[in-house]
Image (tube, rainbow, N blue to C red; front, side, top):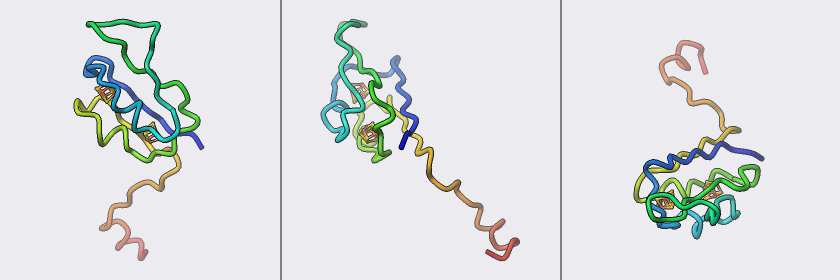
Amino acid sequence: MSNTVTLNIEWCKGCHICVHVCPRAVLEVDEAAFVRGFHPVRVARPEDCTACLQCELLCPDLAIMVADDEAEPARDPALAEVEGR
Ligand code: SF4
Ligand code: SF4
């Protein structure tokens, strides 16, 4: 299991909600960094991400995007009809 967790550090305000809601401890506070007056978040263990989307849905600043790398690609219904599926 491995998914792509993308953090837009420019939009992050350091509230750390994402760190607290992640059930797999994928995200953690970056204690070594200090930008714009707060410790930012870093993606520490992307290999443990289950793409539950809790962090993406609850981030108040839309600073996280999660891509489920194992999900089936979305199909165009019109194309599926042409192909008889
Ligand atoms: S929830 Fe969003 S704004 Fe808050 S620390 Fe996480 S990424 Fe940054
Ligand atoms: S999608 Fe779920 S498991 Fe992955 S980083 Fe966000 S909260 Fe954690």
